[in-house]
Length: 373
Image 1 (spheres, rainbow, N blue to C red):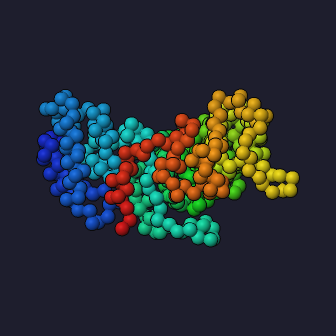
Image 2 (cartoon, helix red, strand yellow):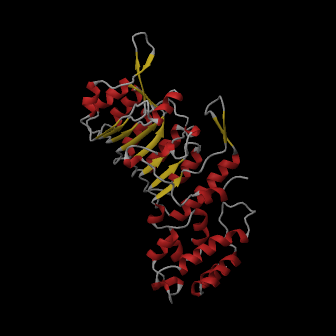
Image 3 (spheres, rainbow, N blue to C red):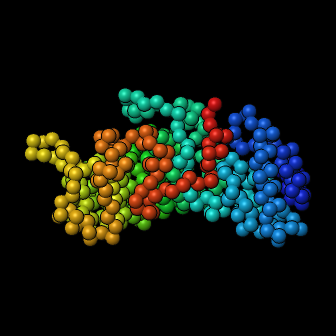
């Protein structure tokens, strides 16, 4: 069957599409209900893109096509569409795994099917949802061939150690940026083992955790080029001390839409010598009053503003007219992201941390085709 598959390289577009349908190349994670007829739009899309390509394609055999042209075409496809295309021949598989396609793997539309619980880890996830995630990761890692530099996960995607182990074990060795706001089901051992393998990691977006020193220490030990950190949740003196102790050369820190202790903020501004960019926009700033109760700080004093002015960028907003600030007050300092627009959690005033629009690799169509029935 494989030898027959490679013979289709010399056929025209129509014959190629028919051959693909004949061999029934199935994406591994599609439900069994997806028959050949449902795959037809994917294959027709490939044929259309090829026929609409540059004139230099005309008269060439499939195996002689320029890789850069193939990459340009395949960048228009999502993960579901790339899966069968990558199985056509060696040249197409090489083009499908190009770093230009896989630089950023954005799973921002992929969510777990879960319910909240009272016991740790405070989340229960449906087994079908876990299996779906495992299948999608398996396909993505197989096609990308280790060329993923940035990986983005939704705040309602609750991975397990097994998922994290799979993507970190020699399948994403060049990962430089990880956006993973949900750690409920990930253990200390699981995240530390992953960080040890991601030695090229430079940027991490993470949630608040109970004991931050262990992860800061692992990052300092394993990721020598680490410069950028974003915390989603709350930020206290313990977190600030852990950063100061293990990541004193951190350059960029965003606490956007978090509950922040004023003691922690002062610690950062007083002691982080190499810090260049700090974002505390829309944060709920808290100070402990003389009676021991926490009070909200509505305006920064001149001393803190003077220290912040030494930074290259200092982002700060506590306006009563600001929608994000209003939401922080309503949510009492712990942003309920699910209440708001899907894109809201992806925004950041720091340009390098802003996630912008969703990528094409896992678009709306891909999310629909891989959804759990």
